[in-house]
Length: 524
Image 1 (cartoon, rainbow, N blue to C red):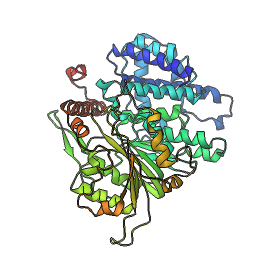
Image 2 (tube, rainbow, N blue to C red):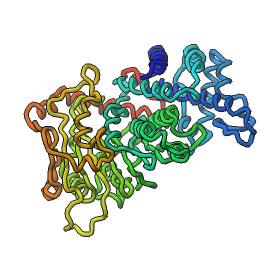
Image 3 (cartoon, rainbow, N blue to C red):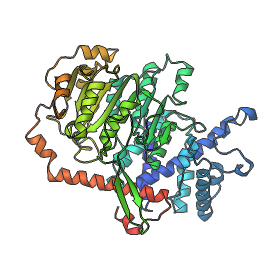
Image 4 (cartoon, one colour):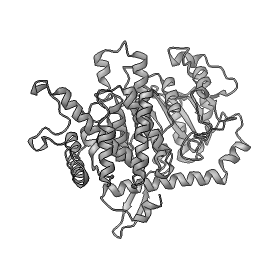
């Protein structure tokens, strides 16, 4: 990170500590920061366009007589109770401008609420911090990296449960290097969280092809060639702002993040590259608020004709959805927990269909300790589309499944011993030829089973009753298995699930304008 970006991060994060004393969590602070930075960017855009003919000006905020004088400059001149009331009303009015969230403005301000009740601190945030930075004109290496670093720090706030929306950037960037996106690709993440995969893919393309890209190729990514889907509105806000600050999309344009349940219906458009880390929770469920005020959950099954099996297991549903998302000659990389590899019943059928219909050519076995959800052991599955099978007797399209074991012998922690780029270099080079081959297909043809890298016959795997893909570990039993079943890790995993459920409940309450009991918030 550049020194200017680090300076900005330190300034903004120090202020987060001040607001925490007012009861504002790190996630809520990031949300308020997004509102205010967007308003500042809108003001900067208006200033930059003021000399253009009226017909050529593109307005971010509503261009009507009643909105004249409103926005960022209005807030700069106020203080005390008047500032708090004006800011609160501004958020309310902006949230009503685009109820359908068909614009970046509508997405970011949908049901926006002021969480900063201390007017003095609000003015300091506006005047002393945000107003002193040129957000629209500054380099994305500064503003974008700074915002991304703030998201990473908020993920460390275990009380807020923010980590469930954050995938380690070291892992994301490694996966993107293996996938090799190009300017011609269409790229999506159906569970995008704060947008990490989308940003890394765009950065890879710009860094690799920047000098060769035409204006039209660059513009594709502002107009929908890269997009994400996120279920939680507040997280979608962060993702949309993250993309804007990295120079992807337009403040006055269409949103590149769609707020919806990605699993609810077949995809409206397909992508040549799908990158995803779906939520680790097993169940797809809806939250029901009863007349007496109690809240319960109901497990959901998605009855989609494009799915191979109907199940309430959210992870298996995402596998099927991602398969449906892929265009012809498409490729996918998806992070999934261990249970997806061996869970029986419908899980076995889904694994078998994946092996038969697609080319599941690579699996990376990840160690524990790299995710904020404690005790999680996950894997990255890489698979490509293949021609439709002519009959069920035809051999599976997965001829060979190569498995790289990064788990055995590695013990990572988030702070003392974090996952670093060097830990993934051997995998990248030996399995995908990163830095050595221009095409991933060339690297695949040169693979040799040795050490951590093993190869398995796809037809043999698909022919077994349980289609067990929990394979390729040098030490599959003993200490590794016992460690996964330890009481401490089970406790951490349960704690992460409970924090995530509480966070979802808070977002639901915000959507319904329901005030939660004070005790519930204080305990966090």
